[in-house]
Length: 304
Image (cartoon, rainbow, N blue to C red; front, top):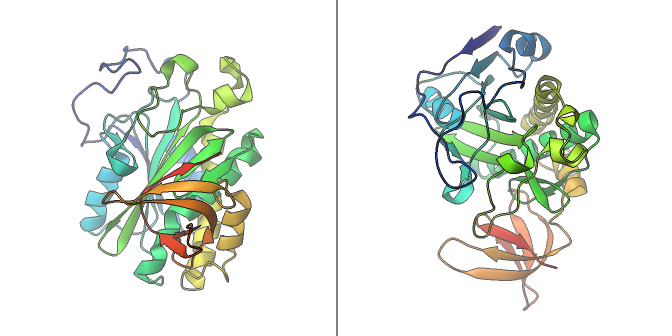
């Protein structure tokens, strides 16, 4: 078992994107927000025969995903959890950034090596992570959540968390950014085509700082849920039916059953009802001709 609280060696230049588009953050921006305890987290989630082998907490880094990708390429084993109290170069899909004040969010990355799962089926990993995050948030806080394909966790119409999965050889690093105690004035404005952001603090009780949940039990619940789903999914070679993952995802999906517009790489646009998710985790959209088209990547907008 390994647990570390440290300042990441790969931290980048000071400053982060501020809500007004500037950079920098006040020295005491994390004041009053409890830090994560790597040893406590490790005691809760690292066990013989389990997925998690090490839990590390960095005071500050550029991107936990980038850090773990480099370590994966250097041969790091499956089961490493790296959380960052502050990140200066957090990344989302489509080149977007993820911004949060120090210790206001859960920003963490997970290193897995799903060798028993065919590469095509690994598109389920961000969906699996979404199920784990959404289920844990509701169980711990009571906040109702839905999943927007492929990588957003919503409460109401606003984005609570984002997920980014990146491959490095036979490894996959899954990054999660979940707003916890972020206040209304600390959230960045929604960019073009992006959802408005929210936090658990806002969702639980508007403006009441005391309503923000403790991040540690929330992270423990997410890691426990991810472990259960991941191990069940790997045992059946990534089959979403036999593992129950497709049913679990469909139950939480806010995309399936809605009309959507899918903006694909290369400029193609599809629109129609989202009718399901295929065995490789691709969103199935029925277009005007009646044909069902699988969407593997792109921006998906929920239509009214």
